[in-house]
Image (cartoon, rainbow, N blue to C red; front, side, top):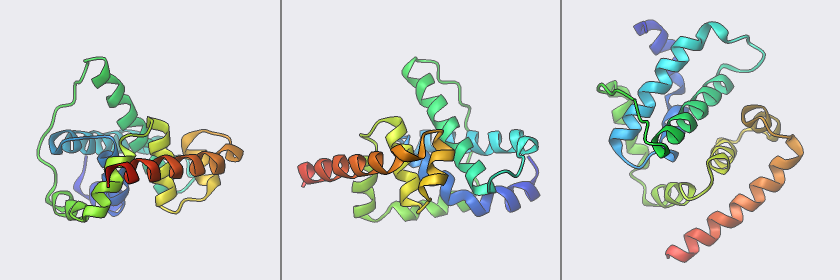
Length: 162
């Protein structure tokens, strides 16, 4: 991966990748592995981007697919991610999770199903129902109902922890 590609095509969207990787990992080591793998997959698939959607939507799709794939591999005991150190820009950005309220929210999100995690993360990023539908591969009519159910689950989980 070239430094230019990373600087221009990945780093501006690091926040997206970080949020998704945080929602699907429990340790800093796993987070770093997932982040690195997402970046690698973005670079590998860059030639497949057909500009039918925004680059950020493409980043979401790849990030979610990588996280879900590795989550399944870990459940089956086939984890094969090899980690190097993260670029410093990413490590410094982890301060976004120093806020206790955000940590409580992310903890609650981690208790959702894998698909519900993806939906609520996209909703929190203020993506439209159509964008969420496109990224998740679900019917747009189901997105609103699903979001309301997820909000209820999160509220109950957070309330039970207070």
